Length: 175
Image (cartoon, rainbow, N blue to C red; front, side, top):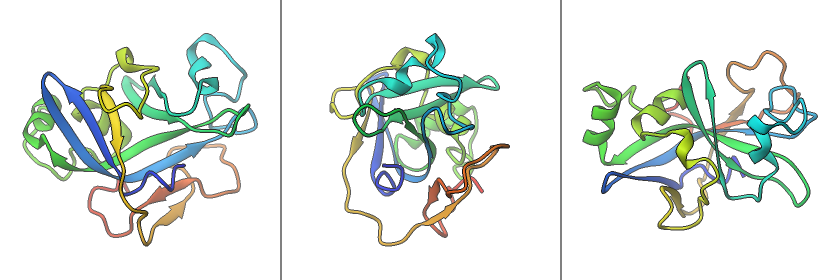
């Protein structure tokens, strides 16, 4: 699902405004066999959402920043997709206020930046991403014609597969 999210529009409804951006970078995280996954050490209170029904948000904190994920796995499985970057398309002024900045380029180019710009907090953990009235949801789009892959960023113990997906040449990709 990490690849399929590329090119779709991520929508955050916040304070009567719609903050939107095209998904340009994601990372996939598997279950207990993935050393970089929140599920690696088994089911705990802090990571129980990894076992939830696909299509729900999983929000957790890393180094004082909220990480926005959607649960994605096969039936009976465990896994999720981290939203790493979006290209802002609507509500840019509100995003800049939330980030306390005036430039657009660095606004959402990384998972912590993205979450700050969209006002992501733990309060939306567990919300469905498929409902149009959900605080965060996805607008569909045709599949992107091309994308690149790489190993995940900031991961010290990674799987052999390249699980980071991004749009080549897009200025909002984090690296």
